[in-house]
Image 1 (tube, rainbow, N blue to C red):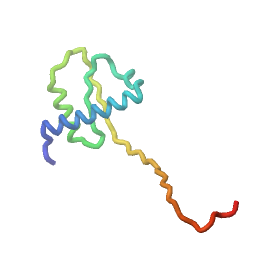
Image 2: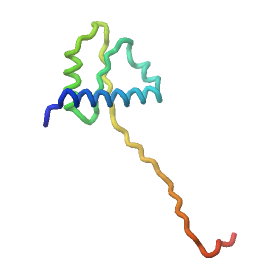
Image 3: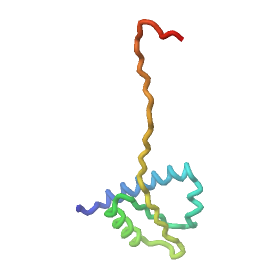
Image 4: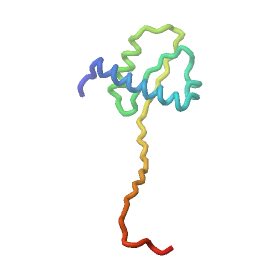
Length: 97
């Protein structure tokens, strides 16, 4: 396993933050579960190496003692959308109705 670079950690954190923000716009009630002044640490459900690196980075960052830490585990969900496609066919005469 290669060690993640600071840029890779920053890029992934930005991506997860952006996805979280989109979720908040769709479901703002999630904010009721986050205390004021909380430090959010984003985790990727499918990337333990990133999680370890991001937690270590967050633990090394200075923060006020009254700031609770909230871990936000992000998980990809794939939506399968059925798409209907119409295909025309030229026929000699229509069927009788």
